[in-house]
Image 1 (cartoon, rainbow, N blue to C red):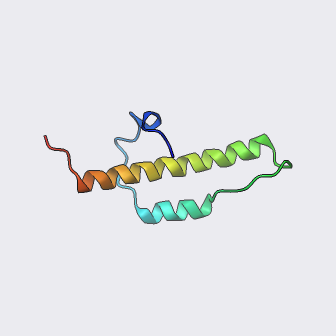
Image 2 (image 1 turned 180 degrees about the vertical axis):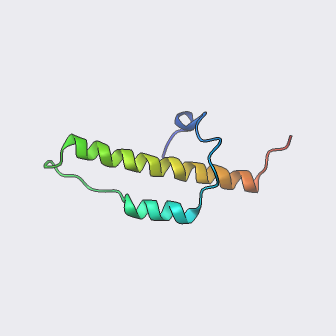
Length: 73
């Protein structure tokens, strides 16, 4: 799980994110197990892909929370 500090100040202007998109990306860029035969570059590339999926999941949750609990001005 990502910390809120990591996300702070990022993604406020993202368009609405769909659960369908997140599910598809989660399937395409599924978590992998690595072995000693994998290179550091292969692992870093994979973790970069997963980072984007986690980022979008986090912002989907924020968008859903904002719909359910709108801020009063």
